[in-house]
Image (tube, rainbow, N blue to C red; front, side, top):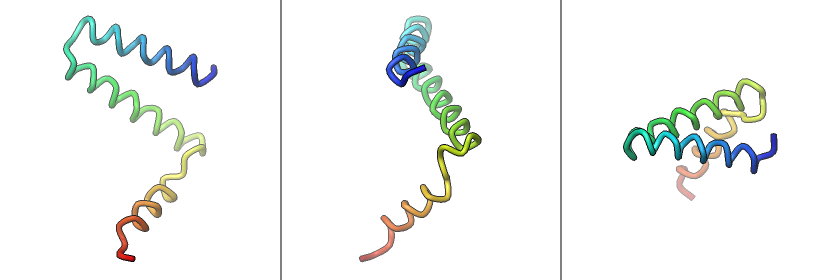
Length: 63
């Protein structure tokens, strides 16, 4: 599945959720979807959380 197809599917699902609920509930669904995506990326090894933490630490350190 290409990223374009995935993005379209996510947009359609969020649109359907918005039709049946309100905007706040749609945002909750989107956040849970984002969390699921991140967990999947970490478990498959495509995303390294230690690198993300190191990048944030470098941004916070005084120059």
